[in-house]
Length: 261
Image 1 (cartoon, rainbow, N blue to C red):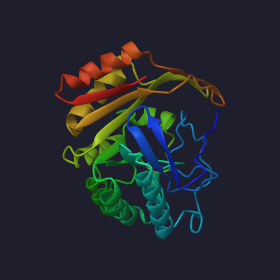
Image 2 (cartoon, one colour):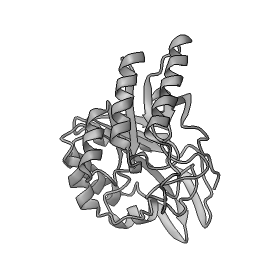
Image 3 (cartoon, helix red, strand yellow):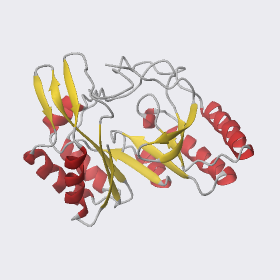
């Protein structure tokens, strides 16, 4: 599987399929992925050992100063971002100073580009941490992952290294009282001799019930950007027409969608 890693704390701005002109922030090492998921479709590659992170993550001041410099440069050049996005080489919310860094970024955003939004792309695993949840509620786009409503599918697609019960996850997502965006990646293929498909009627029926329970402000529906041959299998894109049909199911609930092909 091809690997793409961000080699700086601040990257871009880049044109995002889902977010527009996005200035990215990577709270993780620049040379390897750090995540409590090991998603079979992740373009950052496979997750290694995430133990002993102390000293390997950028510090709060380091992130603040890097963002301050970049926003100053962009302001001087009249280069306006649509969104400042926490993503990078893994799960941003596992950074021990994630809540404080969010506070810093809101201050800097308000100083330089108050019209820009702040987004966090998270795999949803840390939302039971009240400090993380409070920080996520402060941002404009709290984008949380739910790839399936079945534990067995999550185990294959996302390969979590933490204990995860999907029913508990759905309840915790519902606890945001609508102030969140759900992102779901749909794909098909084979991995380690197991069929991969979270678009079956059973999958979609359970997923749409979960979306109804969570009642997010929006659902982002997308697929892999290209067919990907991981070690031990092959992953394939879901056609655009089928993604639009899934979006129609969500919109019947009165929830807006964004579809990326």
